[in-house]
Length: 128
Image (cartoon, rainbow, N blue to C red; front, side):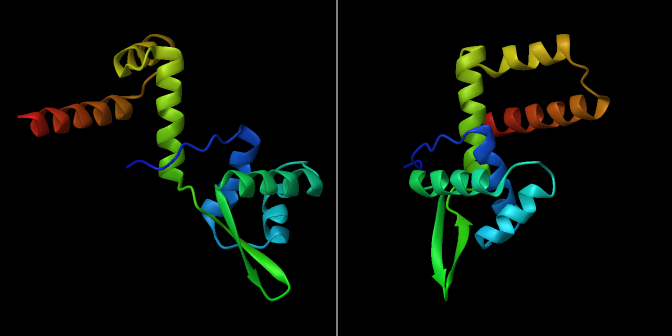
């Protein structure tokens, strides 16, 4: 059974990113990590953290007088949810139109094309 879908906003994903990089963290450490690369206020970050707790994306465990936070939603789970959502909303659930779009409107490097070929070859071998 697949894990339940937990919708994460762009802002909430910044908090998750801090936790995916290193966990567990205290709320003070999360605030410091996010403020080092943004101008967000502490209250905003704590609000986002509380939303993530409410959604079940993060858990808090008591450690003396403080709480340690760690992600329950993995980066891979989130990436899977987001990529399926994008495919469904924008490309009718199909990968080929997505790749066609990037090949026509974005520059794919030779390395990108080689990686795609390698993946397609692996898929073909698997299906045989």
